[in-house]
Length: 295
Image 1 (tube, helix red, strand yellow):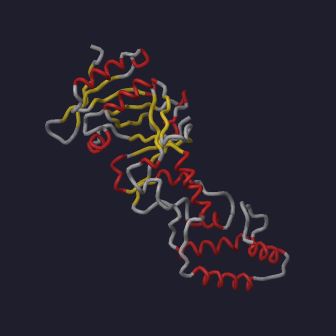
Image 2: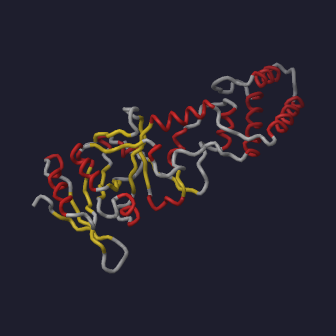
């Protein structure tokens, strides 16, 4: 089952990577710590403005105190639990809660929020134990060819989403590009988190946000747990039918094509169409011509 309406994605690769993919029938999923962008999955996802976070926290402290049978997780501040017990027994009124709120605002003034050791541990766990597989929407992006296909000496793989096989691409998630660093959920969700209300926020949302400078990539991602924590990548097997076509870069040399031809002669790859990229004579774009590498 797919969680999007895409039928295909594209993987930009170097010539050597393409040969390894065809030879071993594996695709590399990498740890975020290997990414070339230091903000990508490696920033602080809790960077809310302190005054806004303070107001959201106060509102949720009131929820903990006043809402009967509210769902919580972890250990609640004993002083808050005492106020909740007293409120529910009718022993205190709003004036006590208002006084607590005033004291809390004074206490939070100038406070520099930082991640707790537990939160740092959770983030580090996410970075070290998960692997990411990145694909793109387009096959003709000149910047992508230059940056990820070895300056047009590599290739682009057209990959198919196959619901019947439940392949990972069916669960790919689109990357969001924005100016601000990503937060995990809305500020009220994070305030609930710090007050131990409801459920812990989904940290995976943080994994699909990048700077708008990267928007040309039109990237989608698959994220999964690593099978081998001894290294920072996993080479995961794929179904041969996931590869629909391969586009060879306009600067790929003949010897590299010969090695690619040799691997494509394997019967399991007989369905794959091969195209040669060429520069257009009138526009800044590539033309793709189907070729027969079996000859």
